[in-house]
Structures are given as C-alpha cells and as structure tokens.
Amino acid sequence: SYVLTQPPSVSVAPGKTARITCGGNNIGSKSVHWYQQKPGQAPVLVIYYDSDRPSGIPERFSGSNSGNTATLTISRVEAGDEADYYCQVWDSSSDRGVFGGGTKLTVL
Amino acid sequence: QVTLKESGPALVKPTQTLTLTCTFSGFSLSTSGMRVSWIRQPPGKALEWLARIDWDDDKFYSTSLKTRLTISKDTSKNQVVLTMTNMDPVDTATYYCARMSGSGDRGYFDYWGQGTLVTVSS
Image 1 (cartoon, chains in turn orange, green):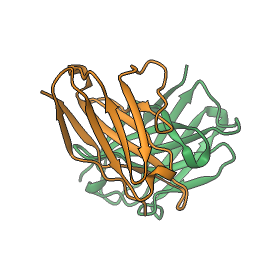
Image 2 (cartoon, chains in turn cyan, orange):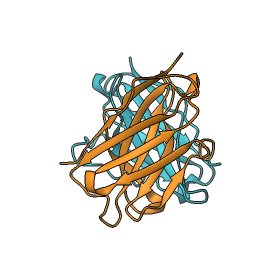
Image 3 (cartoon, chains in turn orange, cyan):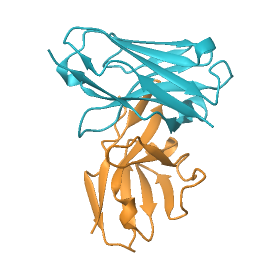
C-alpha cells in the first residue's frame, strides 16, 4: 500500500517560513492535499491539488509537489498557525485514501 | 452551505458492532460526482481513512479493515451509515465523516463533520 512520510515536528519562529514535507514514491505524479488540525477541532483543508488554496485560506499557505516530495510552505508564520498538518492523496492503484502521519508545527 | 454531523454511541463494548450515522446538508449524494468518506483518529494519533461511498453506490474500504466495515447511504434522508463489527479497544477514536470533492483519483476532503468520539471498553 502507498505510504506518506512526514516529519513528526517542525519548529519555526514567528515571521519566518515553515516548510513541511510529505514523502512518497513518485508522489509528484499524484495530487496532494493538506489539512490543518488544531487541538479538539476537525481538520481543515488548506491546500488541494498540490498548490490550490480554498477560499478563506491566507495566501501565506502554499504548496508544491515534485519527484518524491510534496511540500507545504507557510510564510510569515503566526502563532495561530500552530497546529498539526496532514498530507493526503488518493491512491488510484488501490482505490484507497491515504494520510501522512502528521507534522506538529510549533511556533517558537 | 455544506454541513456534516456524525452521530452514534459514545461507548461500545468489545466484540460489539458500532453503527455511526453521518447526516449532511448542502449537497445530495444522488448528484453525479458526490462522495462521502469516513475517517478516524485515535487519541493523539494520525488520521486514518476508512471508507468511501459514491453517488452511484460504488464503495471503497480500507484494506486492513474491509472485512469489518460496511458503508451505505440513504439518499432520501441525506445520510451515510458506517458499521464496524467486532469492536476492540484499539478502535477507540474520533470518527469523522467528510465530503470528498475532486475527480476520483485526485479526491480531497473539503468539508468535515465535527467528529464523534467512540470509546471501546467493557
């Protein structure tokens, strides 16, 4: 089955740029989606189709996907961005949804 | 606007069958392209995709759980039901339903329910 690998944690100072990676075999050939989850809340879609932003998501959130790594980039990080972030793909070879293990973003 | 809400028991005993209902509004599962999935999250752990049902009644299940899961829909009630048999304490989790958008092999979850915590304990 398809596996997505994320770093368990990323730390960043306010105002700096955070990059959260999502690794998978030839992930660049898939569409990657990203979710933000704050404690006690349901996940919220922040990036879909690798780099598209849903309405209401700040432009500070962006995404890229190439080769074996997809990346969620958060520019000018704010305290309110502190959350868990998950990447997700639909594995068409098995017709199954797949989530990464999640990355806890800490704003220092 | 699109909303989804999960309902079901908060506590089930080991070996029992769990039945969860997702009641949604703002879209219809009889409309071509509409899909709903169930996703769960054990306390302090990652999200895990469980199952999906499509507008045309196609169904897809997690490989590791497919023998225990059944997903169904009642279009007239705007509901999707998930049953999971032979519950075990490791199945303790918050269970979410979510609408899936995008084409079949590029799908993403754009709307989520609030989740319902299910504890498995005797």
